[in-house]
Picture (tube, rainbow, N blue to C red):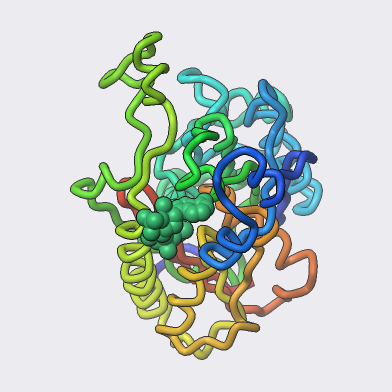
Length: 329
Ligand SMILES: CC(C)(COP(=O)(O)OP(=O)(O)OC[C@H]1O[C@@H](n2cnc3c(N)ncnc32)[C@H](O)[C@@H]1OP(=O)(O)O)[C@@H](O)C(=O)NCCC(=O)NCCS
């Protein structure tokens, strides 16, 4: 018998910077072309924060939108979990900044670091904390200002990433709806294929380390691509099994928006028709922990997800980390 406690999505929100960086803009910055970027990644543009505007600014906006959508007051929130690798500062947790900005005075708040898997890691954590600790109203946020750690001279990586935040309010569910399964995984043996080596205790900030650009993103694109497709397929299969459903039951799959070719390769493995796969990577690029909650918010508010919809979510990111979930709305 499935003894899972029932937790459901009560509301969603998103916030992205106004400024848009197009492929044509990037053509003026590095040796690249709109054709190359579009053909290899499916990305046309990404939103980029003005320098110095921190993650908490957008996270608070997304959070307020999710609270309004859920009809929940900030004071009712008893837990805030923020998945990010680009918080406002090393400490305190940016979740604490968001708590203050939105007035969620009764909440416990902390960040988690699982890169592009941050949102789905947070979903499993939220479910466990609701079941065991009895939290009733949880604000789960995934957000990044990746532009703050992109090397704008490195064409291998600078074309891929964008900034943004997505947020959801979670609460105890009723009946047949709710989070049906979550599964999370990691393998640190692959940590050097996608990482940022600088500004931590390994390579503390110094003029020399900044000159070497150690604070920016390093990536072996082809290897990441290969692992992403296999791991996402494995995780989704596992989440479907745990939920007791088959892929044909899904009304929508929301994959992490890293690259259209990765999304299509995963869809092909499951023989999913393109109209069942949510894609917005063309407009946002890879926003890491924000990509699934931004897509989820768009899908709900444009009617792609309705009451009763069965939705799969699957992701892959640095660590390596990967994760999947199945949710009935
Ligand atoms: C990064 C990625 C788009 C590169 O695509 P690819 O088809 O693997 O391309 P390659 O890395 O093999 O590079 C092919 C050529 O394009 C060049 N190239 C790389 N970036 C380029 C750019 N922005 N513009 C033009 N050419 C570029 C390379 O230098 C290489 O040239 P060469 O053949 O003369 O050596 C792809 O590997 C990818 O998406 N990987 C996964 C990345 C990802 O999703 N990361 C986040 C996971 S959460």
